[in-house]
Length: 516
Image (cartoon, rainbow, N blue to C red; front, side, top):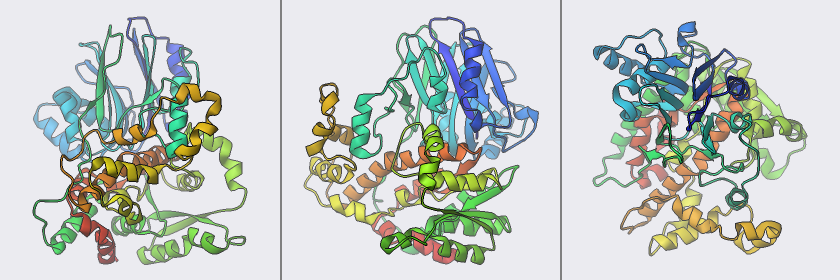
């Protein structure tokens, strides 16, 4: 896991090397193990390295193909890189390192954008094509790794974090007031806007190719999307359990490949607990990490927020080397300046415990497994779905679910709150923003399962995406790579075609019982 940034002057103007260094320095925390630069007249690419696989200098980035045509800056991990490497070697490719980065580079050289369909992992990368004078940007299916971009005049700026773009003098920071209204409605962003005017987050599951001489950017091209649907013929529950067992073990084991120590978060819940159960069989005495809360002043429902007791029981069960962080009154206020700098903009509510637990984990390991995504792909929030499970048609479903997802300021009062700038944002219809998440929807929705599958799609595209952006930034604040086993391609594909009733029947809880 690393940090990337770059400049592409579409008018052919030479890139400022000094400015490129400033942009790369702005994300130095993402890669404490090294930095690299590539400049070719009007294009410049910067990279900060967090060494995970192949710690040698052979893994240095930006990385160039042997023939010199393609230059890669890459952030992430492709877990099936060893299988892809064998396939590429059979096609005549030679490798100078043991990294997945070089596999990504050569896969792109061989298959172009079709290589994205073959990658099972998390990534955001840029490839410069010297022959075609074009820049290729891409992001993984689920949006685990962030990527931002901005067009300032004829300067395309991009980076793993917004602060890399802010470091370029062509960009003057100002607030996007339409995005502010969006955030104060949903406590999240459903579009590709950010709170910074003219800085966009690159959409998950998309790629874009930009050529020299263009005056405007093309729309990103989608290569993958979620598709939750009921199977035409459901299998027996025992078969689903067996397949989930196999795919889940496979997903965790794929993500244990590393040349540095791997640990795991252990919250006390099913998701991180099941991951730890499998990882502990491969990594005896694996280090686990929990964030708890000081209970000396807690009462009522607050007492249930602390999960240390259950995490400790799991640690005992799986024989892990366990560490805990206990948060006290005042810890949130104390961390706010650092938290704000790393997050850059708020998403999906409170996140300061994530900052503290990743700080704890980073003192012991460089890679940590997280249970993020389990609830979103296995229908772990049934109290959300029933609110819009019975409808006469799609528009009625949107009306119902939209009201549930208005999180901060309801429509009846938002005009009053935004009165000083209402003339600038009154054209923004947040219901339309909500509905536009569904770029397509099933032509005929006839039963509750259809609408629940749409809710799963919505939450994966919005709530989960926001969680992933937060998790990445707060982990990378401490030079820590977070891996997400539940977002393994094969496991996600399985979950999307599993009957809703079986997911709501706690299929993953059955699996956890088997693991224990």
